[in-house]
Amino acid sequence: METIIVQLPGPAPWSADETGSPELIHLGPGDIADFGRGMPGGTDVRITLTDPGVSRRAGQLEAAGDYWRLSNFSRSVSYVVENLEGAGEYLTVAPGRLGAPVPFEFSRVVLPALSGNATFKVFAPQHAYLGERSVPGGGEQTVHPFALDPTSKYFLVLVALCEPRLRDPSDSALPGVGQIVERLRPLEGCRDLTRSAVNYHIDYLAFAKLRLDLGEEAAAGTDGGRTGAKRTRLASVALRFGLVREEHLGLLPPRSAGRLAPQEAGA
Image 1 (tube, helix red, strand yellow):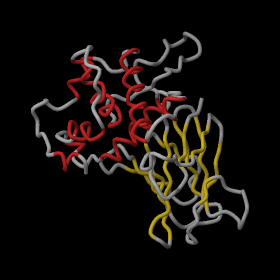
Image 2 (cartoon, rainbow, N blue to C red; image 1 turned 180 degrees about the vertical axis):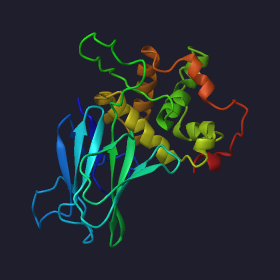
Image 3 (cartoon, rainbow, N blue to C red; image 1 turned 90 degrees about the vertical axis):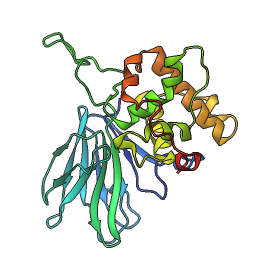
C-alpha cells in the first residue's frame, strides 16, 4: 500500500480534464524519488522540473510510515511545502536539510525558479487518525482501509454528496458538482470553492482514499457518465460502511443558509 502519491507537473490539475488523468508516482514505505531538472535526456530524476533555475538534482522525497520526508540538496535556497488544506499554512526546508518530515495530507512543494516557481503536489492518503490505532502491546498496528479525515475539505464534499440519502434512504438522487459547490459555499473555509475543486476532491476520494475500481462503469458513456459513476460508487461505499453517518450532517451549513444563484454555483 502506498504511503504517498506524487502528482507530476503538468498543464492541468487533477480532474480538470475528465478525459485524462495526471501522471502519478506511487511510493510505499522506504521508497524514494529524486526531483530536479535532471540530465539532458536522462532518467536520473523521477520528478522532472524543467525550469533552468532548478538544480539538476534539487532534492529527494522519501515515503515513511504514513507521512513523508523532504531533503533539500540546494546549498543556497530554501524550499516551501504548502498545506493545500490549510489557510496559508506552510513549512520551509532550509538549504542542505535532509529528511525534513512533512505532516500534511495535501501538499504542494514549491521551488524558486526563473519563471516564478516550480511546483509539484504530494498526497499522503494513508494518514492515521485517533481511534484507528491498535491497543498498545497488542501486536502489529491495524491499517484502516478507509483513513478519512473528518476535518478535511474532501470529507465535506463526501458528506454533501451523501446528504440526500442520509436524510431519506429512499431518495436515489445524488447532488451534482454544482449543487455540492452551492451547498458548501456558506462555510467559511469554502467561500472560494469551485467546480474543478469539487471534481478534484471526488477524484481523490475515489482513487486515493477509497481506492474504487470503477471498471466498465467509468469507461461507458460520456464524460458526465463517468463522473456520475464515481459519485454513485462513492456514496454507496461511504454509506454502506458507515464512513459518513447522520451525525456528520452537522458539519454542513443549515439548509437555508445563503443559497446561491445558479451562475455563482457553477463558478
